[in-house]
Length: 293
Figure 1 (tube, one colour):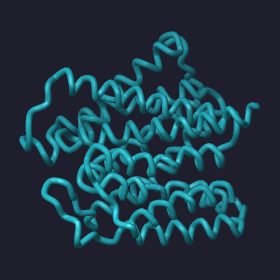
Figure 2 (spheres, one colour; figure 1 turned 135 degrees about the horizontal axis):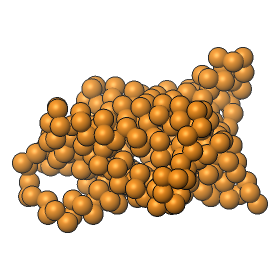
Figure 3 (tube, one colour; figure 1 turned 120 degrees about the horizontal axis):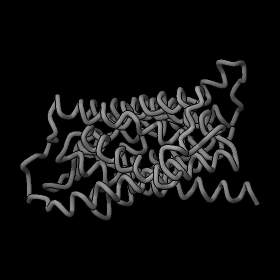
Figure 4 (tube, rainbow, N blue to C red; figure 1 turned 45 degrees about the vertical axis):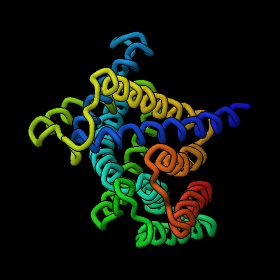
């Protein structure tokens, strides 16, 4: 029963992740990625404080503090790269490329002498083939306002974001073994740094001034919505690692690129080619095989 609940939480986490990524990626078209990360992190931190009953519920255990801060630091860089890639590229393609995060736990295991199994190695091959397919251009489909080319810089940003996300997940898992809520809260402690970077480098995104303006209440609702989805994604993932294990939780929560591609098609009219859809499915299946193999 506990394992089944862990699986359900991991699947729920993938849906929350896709929703947060989609909203945040759209916001990053108009505003700095660091600004979006900083504001949503502050809002998420307030939600966590309400959940745990205020600052008195925060654990300052040395290991929890270390893992939470390290998770937040690596996640900050990862999210900045990922949101920028989402804003500049096709969301389904970027989401699929970032699936490489599942390789990080495998590398950590190999470093301590645990060799990957045959299924894990096959998963790596699938991910590699998927990345290649996702990176292929679509020369025929280019209606005005709908296609954002997946340039080399976007591909590199998405891959780096995925690898750093994998590192962040390792720190979250370690801290969650002691106190999942405090680990998630400490992860958001980097918010002031993100906002500071945005103020120094500029708060506007690539599309500032393009298209109609955004009403303040719409922007506020989008930020709160993205924050709440991100918080729910982090908490459900942390809880799922307690009830199942990191491999199962990572595999199932990594199904979000397919949902993200659906959002891109439905709301942004971003179509994937047949090769890109095959690549997306290959990276997701490869990710599942790596984490379970």
